[in-house]
Length: 166
Image (cartoon, rainbow, N blue to C red; front, top):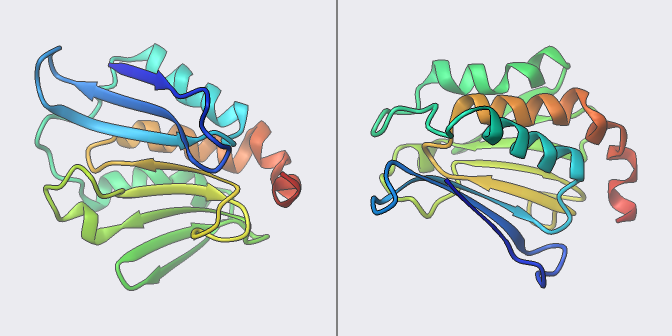
């Protein structure tokens, strides 16, 4: 596991990079990035999840299936987030429309490690978020579920109404 913090990054650019490797010299298994404005409770949930496990919740080379996506987004469904499909994207949006978890079905079908399969964001739009997390294909579903739980029920959800003020 490797975590990098880029201290000089502007709030809307990548400031955190998390990557998991099977061994110190192997190829990257999965990665996640977060912008500098990502809320502290979301980052804390990320770090807590990583501290509790080894980041290898997803078997190497395993496919991301419907069961994994359903498990990862269950906290959003239980919190009443709206679910929708827009082309290649499956989205779960909070009731005020200022936060979303987006799953890219096309990225999930590729072997590329550069496309974001998951995007978690809050702000005016996915194209101009106040903050965002982007995760690759093999990012563990339990990690996405923990982040979704924080977003839907945690301390960061209480700050959603102030997202536009950031």
